[in-house]
Length: 182
Image 1 (cartoon, rainbow, N blue to C red):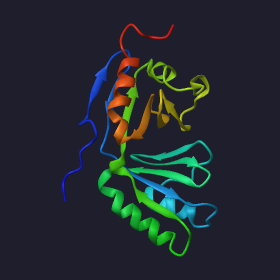
Image 2: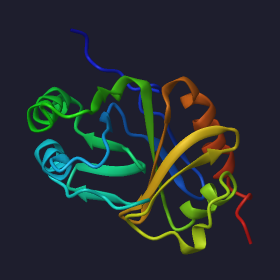
Image 3: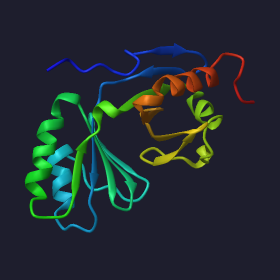
Image 4: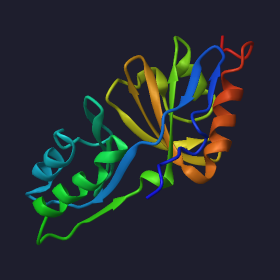
């Protein structure tokens, strides 16, 4: 098996906010609805509780985010995906669910700095003035789908790998010195 490679090989940019690609990161899309064993399955896979609507639960370098009524995004170190999938299969055995490794289909960026919010404010229609740590949003950055959450003084942004270069360009352009919002 080949070693995982992130979409942009760790691209970085320092403007009035810093941007860096942080992949490869393990990710599982879990589709399930109203299962009594769902909370136990998520706990077994990533060690968090079941997130409520538009929230992400974080435990160290693992997380579970609410993506929609029946969809969750599980995040973990890349080498742990197989074990997490096995834990989900065991805990959810006999129930209607879908758990898929989407690690290689996603790109992940980290925005940091005092003005990181301004970078996203230029790109997405989310009310970032009222955006709290632990909140997760699915939205658009310019014309492409993204998901993001606030954590540790910055933001984690997830997009499809196929648009990673475009999203890095958007983020970089939005963080150019001299383009700060006043």
